[in-house]
Image 1: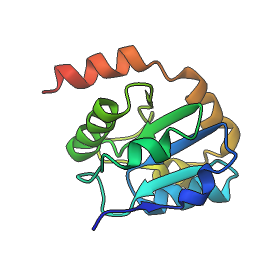
Image 2: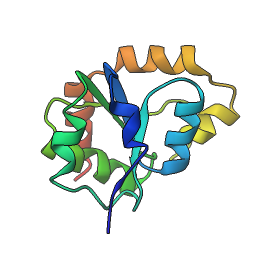
Image 3: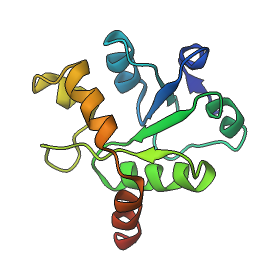
Length: 130
């Protein structure tokens, strides 16, 4: 069964990042960024997670830069219309958050990426990929 990894990170957090993979959530959590992940991967998102994720004022969604990640982001947006979709920069398709850290990114750069997230532009881009 699917469940959320690191759900305790949401308690008292003003924002959180929903990652595609638990490894990505660990990277962000270690950098001081509240992050959770569906433990079963990109294809899983449960309706009961909406209330849990609604504990934070801002929810950012980051999927891997492949078809499964893009589908996951779109699926979460359908359940959580307030969520901000965050595309990952400077990577070949298929990259993930851990790849950003391997490329030298750290919390300040990632925080700036979150600030620049534009949900309408990203959502339109995802719709065009259908």
